[in-house]
Image (cartoon, rainbow, N blue to C red):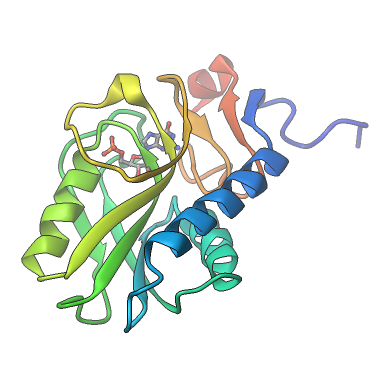
Length: 191
Ligand code: 5GP
């Protein structure tokens, strides 16, 4: 072992640190909490797996300090496969376990890139008759947007670069990194 971290060979640079993520999530949770003080039957948080898993876990806990009560639901959809460009085709890998009809839903997203996945998901939730749907996303790439979507709660706007860490993968790797970073170009060459 060297003094460096195991990922030093692969990560070019960190763009959002663990501390910045923590601070931002506390802010987002406070905003959401303040906006839903009058929701009687609580919120339904819908996490889009796998990328949003870290964000869901931390955001739900931060929200839990303030309320309202929230049910946690998980969906898995696929739009990227193993590559780094959006296919625009969304497949449901795991559907919601409970009915969203009449519920106030907050979709918990890792990243809004082209917006294609999210726009599909919002149509899907509307077709299942949710009472309201808002989106909280940790990351957004404004330059990559192809479909304009009203995202009420945004953690960080980032440049149009492929990022990994904090749930986000490249070919299923790097999800466990506690920060968001950019890979060295030779990692793609090696893949
Ligand atoms: P969109 O449909 O907005 O283009 O993005 C769909 C999904 O692609 C996101 O939820 C995320 O899982 C993945 N994605 C988009 N941009 C990135 C990125 O920079 N890095 C990683 N690892 N995944 C991304």
